[in-house]
Image (spheres, rainbow, N blue to C red):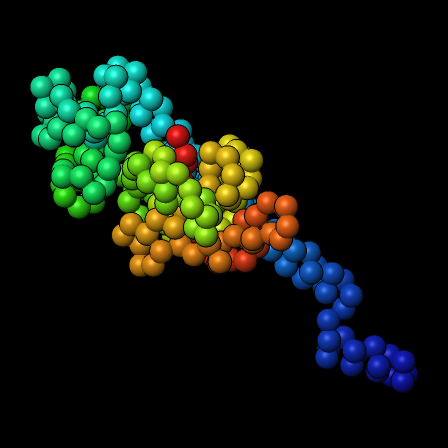
Length: 235
């Protein structure tokens, strides 16, 4: 056997050919592409889920207001006019979590028994699966009149807002804002919220939002990987 033939057999026995390496790279690329596509599909599904919740609840809120000329949770004639309701609100035009009963939780019972929600909720003094809806991350949602939205370093007026809950990954929050609002966490209808609810910790604006300097608006830290952000939909 020639020296050249010996070297060829030795190279074939000890390593991969260029064709084999190329095939392996193609397979790795296909697998990586499948993983990325699956992640993209999961992200898209969660964004659509939260947007559907936001739009459905706001439609229910406005439908209730139009029918009864009152706010869910705050409605002072709910027991007599809505079958199945257990509590009235105080009728002061504000859905207040500090009221007795807690109007921010009572709102779900009023909306459900009036036929504006697909599920039935019953009032309790604290959030539970039977009294309040939750986001896909298990954090209860809330409609309330307060200032827990937008820039926590700024004094904001209290407004009715729907809290979609904490534990929302920042890239999901940013995508929701881009799809249905202006993409800015301290402006528009969709804003950052530090509301904690039953989450292990309150969302931090420092971790979720980049406070741009000067006149430039703040932006979501979408690439940071932060998993605990909050979103409020301001009425």
